[in-house]
Length: 286
Length: 330
Ligand SMILES: Nc1ncnc2c1ncn2[C@@H]1O[C@H](COP(=O)(O)OP(=O)(O)OP(=O)(O)O)[C@@H](O)[C@H]1O
Ligand SMILES: [Mg+2]
Image 1 (spheres, rainbow over the protein chains, first blue to last red):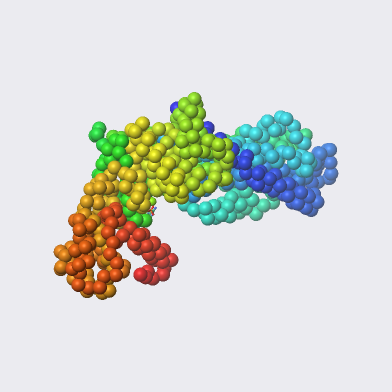
Image 2: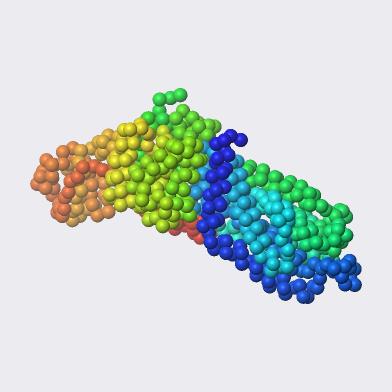
């Protein structure tokens, strides 16, 4: 990659960041949607569901002194949701760029199409990571304790997830001719993916078909490491942390519990495939 | 390498079974102002899109500054600038940010970037709005900014697709002065499209395009000479009969256009007194004017450019109808 290409990637990235910063409505909705989710669903269902892991009571998971309730459980799910929607939106915004003629200006410039796709992906992934970070501000609402170590470990995980999902968005958007298609993608791809990712329900006692869908859904592997990282920072005993899958709080694959690095490999693999696809579709031109 | 800046040979573009550009061939010389004149849907934008590497030709070849537009896209892109027919600015960025974006894509070093941005903003009289968001600009201001952007990286060939759409007469004149100056100073080659005849007259050479074909290509003067000397327009009491009458008696070819009869004569000033004296029918009005490019278009296609545009609307409406399963009608 030449210096010129890097600069082109940078300026395309910067354009998306600047546009995001000026779009106050988008920032506000990125803040309020998670609040509503946590307050309404979190509080509404916490009572009904009771503690998911109870370390003091008499339930199957009794260990002494700690509990994980539903609000804490969905907190990483809400981070993932925010990242996910921001990513898909940014990726698909190539359709808007096309609609408003800005894409033509970029495509006629002496810059490789691959660089254009990469700039779009990195821009979208950065915006999505920032929107995921916004959710951390409302951690107290979920009863989640923030630690510096946790935040530092969450960031790369968020970015990798955001990168994968934005790549998917760009790939979808690169062949799309109209803004109407965006709605269809939201309804038939984005919503099912986030709702069937284990972001909002524990992986315990699911019907088999649902469990299968969750496990083939790449978004699940973006949610899982966020949850492991958040729960770990809540001071749960190692005994529980090592067996999250048994409580339905972590994913397992082929009967083996996953670790964060497994998730990262899966998401990264998916992201790289999607990014290659996005670049390929993009460079094929009209 | 050829001496011509643009060489187009048999260039063709089909969309499905519709041929938008049909075996078009021409050359543009360095430093020339070359214009495409034609009604809506003639294929002007489609031709430009192929020349600037945005559309792949179905058939034929084109060289730009010696580079093939299909096989050497990178080299072609470096050599050109374009002002699109449709808006293509980012509304959420300021004027300067839009220009910076462009400058980086075109690899201008930072110092030169700042200098050129200042220059082109000055040129289109937008210096005082440099840091305003483009969404607050008027249509004409946006157009000027786009023209500035097309020139920012000092291209060898500048494509202008309907550049003066939405500009007031004063800005229009300004832009033309600037374009002439540019050619003087930088020897830039300009390829423009328009459906304003007055504007095509500014060009060194004009290609008249209709239904994907180039129907004539020459200097504006030579094209108008094809029409003959002067254009005489008369309105008479009995148009159908008088048309044949005039053809027989004065040895001219009469074209009926709406409620007028038009024909060309060598020397209009001396023809009129003779006509008034000798015409046997009832004459309502008579007028004389120098031929315009529209007369050339009329002569070559049997329609005026305005008519052709109305036809085109029919074509498009019919195509829409067919698409939605309705019966086309005329
Ligand atoms: N992507 C496309 N798919 C199908 N048909 C197209 C496409 N682009 C252009 N056409 C058709 O090709 C023809 C030529 O279009 P073009 O845009 O080149 O005309 P033009 O001469 O630039 O007209 P105008 O003066 O209105 O800009 C039109 O009939 C148009 O409908
Ligand atoms: Mg056009």
